[in-house]
Image (tube, rainbow, N blue to C red):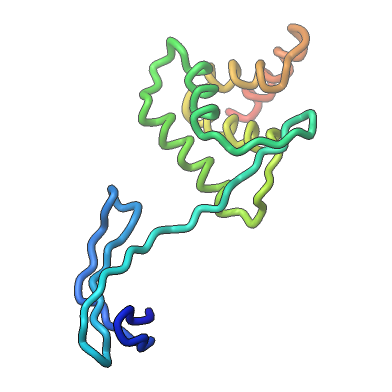
Length: 152
């Protein structure tokens, strides 16, 4: 870290503490040449994630939209909000940790269904029925049979 006073490139960390709920770190540093102290802030850089929709339009990833869809699927189900928020965080982290900056809406939907399958099977089927656009009862039954087969 370059000293703002003398421009020397080496400093030592004197104090370090998280701020903003752990989203950033405040560091007090001391220059190894002039011994003056200065403060730096560190935060994880999050790159924007773009979702490619079915019609090939693009929009910024919106975790609130994802959480809203999962909440609708869990309506009147015994699923705590904290569980859905954690699942949303995990999906977002999975997407952010991939090397891709653009992801299809299909990928986001598949990740959401995987999480809902673990959380609540009824919510999973509700989400799948909207996401996969079941056209008739036979398609719905096929999905239910797949779910039953995976339980065995």
